[in-house]
Length: 241
Ligand code: 6PG
Image (cartoon, rainbow, N blue to C red; front, side):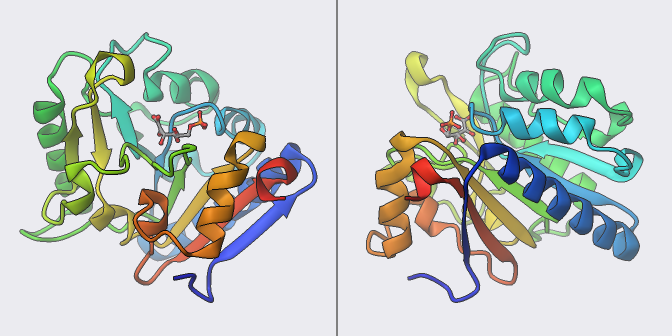
């Protein structure tokens, strides 16, 4: 069901989405740093956010020394593969800003199986967030994309990982075409303080309609319901109608 605090925002131009999101990023980072001394975010791969990362890389006066970048999901491919999510984030953002190397937290998916990489990523989450047994990270900002089938991060319709409630990061077996993957689980996505979905282009229109109607609750993207955080859907006119 749609939550009254969800915000569905449709923008005329894609650049306006990047501008809006950059300002939210700035505000959320500043608030998080004021309270906790650091700002934590988990970013998505795919094509949609590329323009945003480029935009963010040129936005002045952002507190990169206090910003920590994780990923929402990763594909088990070499780090220089075009399919490597963190590789894309590195090229479009990380390499262009003054972020200390210890503030970036890629999934070690290049040389490990999805199972082992997920275990290592979960350990990294526990270490960074100082979690006790059963604790869940509280990201300040998570940026998600959405597939035409309603998947988000690497949470695909009909897969067992949708029922995962214990793990923070889990392996997903997708086979060679889509690559095996590591994904943050719903426990983590739904414990974030701010979640932003990005959807652009006509191909996303049908799935966005379904999501907005609140009718199909089995769509993975519809299962992102932050318990205490805010949820935003940022769309261009092609996706948002
Ligand atoms: C991935 C993702 C995935 C992505 C969607 C949308 O690594 O594949 O993180 O969930 O966000 O598939 O992808 P596009 O932005 O390319 O449409």
